[in-house]
Image (cartoon, rainbow, N blue to C red; front, top):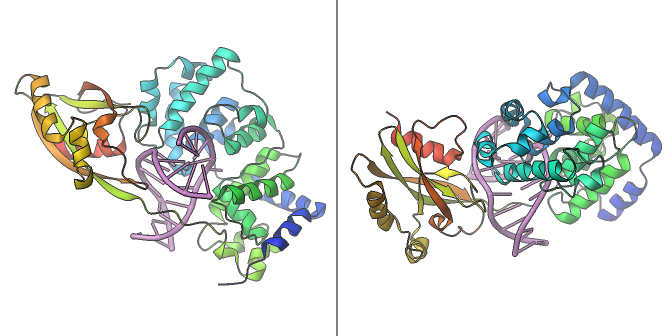
Length: 368
DNA sequence: AAGACGGGGTG
DNA sequence: CACCCAGTCTT
């Protein structure tokens, strides 16, 4: 473990970014980006709607993962008007498998807001964009700089890592204070010239060269100005507070299937898997079973209810134990979150709004 | 400031 | 298994 600069030195250094260093970083990085950037589908457009979609899909998600979702989504909803007119179920269906489903609901809501109050036009500034639902500092800066050439900075996980290393900065990028520190650093570096490419270059460098483990400093276009590399701290930065390990929570899935059909429950739009369909899930944890029973939706009780609801015996009912990692203390029994039940075709139609967990349960229980 | 919110790639 | 990904919202 190598030495790190004291915070006091860091703040002085931030004040002291020379104009010439800023210009050199900008020129070298944008030049590198012109040659080495990955070919991503949203790099061929300046349409703020498409940029917006790509940025939201990429939140906490690797860009390679988002690409096929982006292509299908844009084909289904080519404009913000198409999205605004679309039923939410369809939007959630195209999001199925991506995770963080609240993003899809906020995307849909904001599309409606834009079409109602701005006739589908996007605000052109970072400050205005940030007022929209689901658009935070990062996404607002990305849209403003890429689609509208505003010299607005962005700070994502890549930018935190790259800046922490270049300036040998040990601020904690996972706390609000540390994040604010890196945002002001990024603000100090933003250029009037090609701000969108500068932002993307910074992120691209983090994604492909200045990687979390074993950064490829030999391939880095700005390594000669990298303080972290010079003093040997690069691979130890950024400093990130540890996140608690998600706890696997067990659920019993009630799989009721008839000829070509399966019973799915519609979840509340709040919380885990909000708005998705799934085989009814019941908490299987001893500590929570009493709460589930109190809610009147215990598994054994539900078995009888489902038998009665289906009213004939062409349906088979099975229970499948599944686990889902959950942050922190296990949530309320999932049975309390259902708002409706539906008989759905099996195999599931394309665009079924289900989570990956539900897909796995159904595949395992009903395959063959 | 801390926690919730998915799923998958990688060493 | 640990880490973390083109973050945002809620409490």
